[in-house]
Length: 258
Image (cartoon, rainbow, N blue to C red; front, side, top):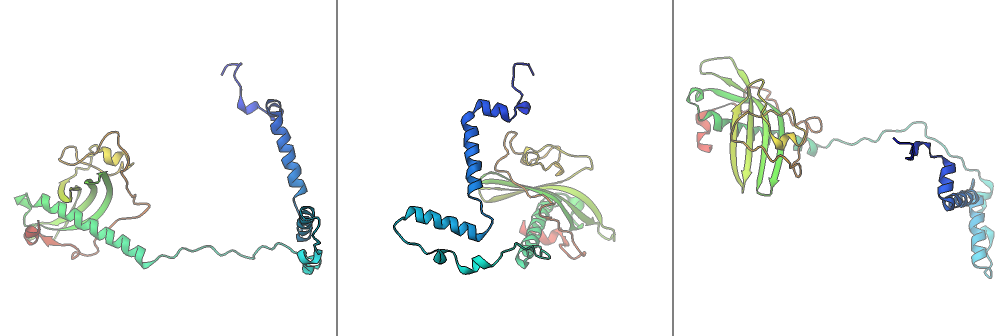
């Protein structure tokens, strides 16, 4: 910084007064006003109000005891602090719990519908049993009123015919709604796979993995609004199946619905 430029950190009160003498006068007047109009008791405050009323209405008699009650003359008032302070508790309602649970179940059904479109095209997986293992991450995107899409990372457990071993794998799913018509896309993810998606990256959802290639919506490079998301830390939309009967099914049982 050159020597001719001002350094705001070294500008003291004297410099302020030189730059604006009227401001210094106004501050002095303000300090004087507060000094004259600060009261230490109810009695002093009421007497000041009484003097103002007498000055405003000089011809009207005003009895001091009508404005200043007698108890203020004799009683001393002391500010007290409670022995303890109870924290304000925000109750957790059953309705809020139901909203989270319903959201988890709804998203669980959506990702499984997308998974069924994937597995239904593969004859080698036709007789496998499957169930939702975990809803890992999600990001809801709004491109416009008639174009919205929802990205998910989730894991599914599958079991081959005649086997007793369940195997878990990570998947990506997109549930897209265009003019009220839903389109599902789903594919498995490799451990190191992480394709780019403007829609999710612009919202800070860096941990949501996408496939390197695939027919899913990636959003626009320079668009951030009105995209919106809810992180797991703010509202944990995490649904994990508690038993093997929580959304188990065979593909042939659901073919008619797709």
